[in-house]
Length: 130
Image 1 (spheres, one colour):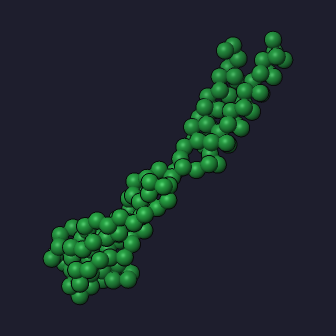
Image 2 (cartoon, helix red, strand yellow; image 1 turned 180 degrees about the horizontal axis):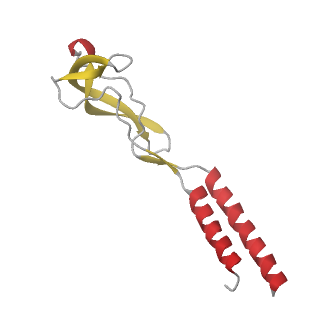
Image 3 (tube, one colour; image 1 turned 90 degrees about the vertical axis):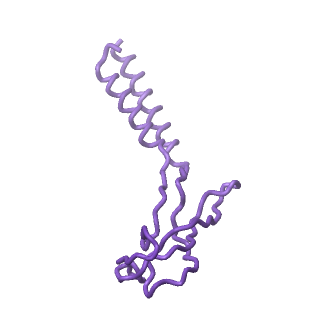
């Protein structure tokens, strides 16, 4: 590559393709009233998660990817801070999604357009110089 601008354009196209083509990752987000030790006092009970309570062992639910491509509920053991000592029952869905990659269809096409455009500009400049 004789022209330094060509190198810069190729690097910009590669970085753009990687940035635009990457999928969005969704991480496990614990319930806001999560606590560590059952029976111990905690400070994140109540509807606003700012009231004193007691840590209770219970069952939580989260949504995970299903084999058919949709979502399905999954239950797991957890410890939650409950006001008034807790009931030991189940906790409503926490809304976390599990460690899953959510593919997006818009990123790949944008990266392809950027790459093709950069190659066309580079080819035209090369013809006009050479």
